[in-house]
Length: 84
Image 1 (cartoon, rainbow, N blue to C red):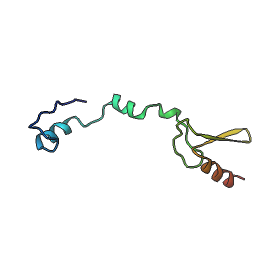
Image 2: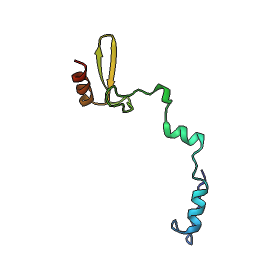
Image 3: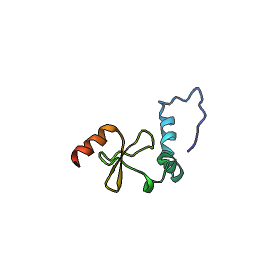
């Protein structure tokens, strides 16, 4: 990614600026990895809605010998009702 210096005669709305800005608009592997922030194979998802769990404010329910994780108490309650 290239950072361009701003000159007074260049405006972000000018055709010249837009052409330069779109030349480098592809995401490379490093930027893609940064945006993901973690290994997708190890991500945990809510057992009810499928939302990716961030590790904060997760709710866990043990049912039998298995632990289920949820993004909220609301999802945990919906899961309880479905599986009771």
